[in-house]
Length: 495
Image 1 (cartoon, helix red, strand yellow):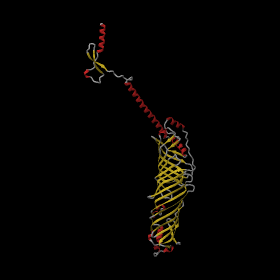
Image 2: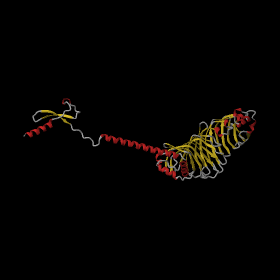
Image 3: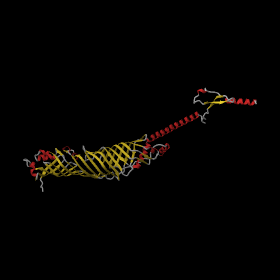
């Protein structure tokens, strides 16, 4: 009995004996304990401390987890830095290779095969994705093509990123700062200087590197070639090359198609025996061995404009057929230098030109023009008429309704159906004049003079005129040269 009581007491002591951490009257919700009222065996109520259940901790200690996260971040950073270093090393190797002689020779040989011309490039360089070459030169061309030589300087294009891993070069537009193109007849035999392309060791190094432009690509892809300041030269048989187009912007686009557009913007067009023209826009396309001209505008004199259409063969004999319409052109452009300061006025008209450039070159142009308010002054013909008829007013006249037809070849120019009038004093009609290259003149013009002039006293040439209503008519015979014309009246019979 006593043992039983003693065991109960021991059990009770373990149950009710608690250790307090704080005053129960000053508890806060954030403390991890709570207090409860309990009764012991004697019925006495007591306040005891009850601990809250703590949350179960993670299986992995917090410090170990943070350590692993730091190691993972370091590995990522070091890996990225390593990849960047490898890429920069390969890029540096590629730049070194591209600027070398082997790359340049291989590319020259590949392009020669693609365009069937023997070509060579200047030094290459690479900046980012921008590929540059100091020069491009066509060393020889097939004998049937009129293009003999081409030199371009400071070429630049942007390479597509995939071109670094493929055998096909995909590029943006190619642009050159300046260029010279030579056309004509090559009097020497053409020989292709093919370049030895046995560079397997060099190719292996590139492939092993895993990055870099292939120096022997299968083909090149780009749509447009632009040359900012391009000059065109012509080399005739036994002649020194002479520029016929200066400082133009040459644009060749859509190169992969069968019809290649070739446009010129700006510059000057200079052809012997023709007026100088400024190129506003010369648009055309190359197809089937011909350059077809369309939608072209050129400037002449101060405000004049010329529109061109037609075709020019770029191989064989260089045959051409061109039609031209012009407006507001200074009439002095159609006269020799001796007479240019003796005529003023604007004319409109057109001309058709055909011929060939090689194998005994020839040219024939047929056209005409008309104008009003044309001023003739200090003219040898008018001076002769004024003296012969004793009429000073006729030394300078203003012509209305001027009409001129002409035919021009490489050796001479012939004016026909020349007509006009300067009322009320003078008319002229049925004029035909031939001017040769040595400036010899030959021709005649029907001249009508008002009867009131012929009826004045002292007119010695009155007998050479046949009266007809208000005007009397005679034939003015012209010979001699442009600088020293021989003139005289010849009587005619009017019907």
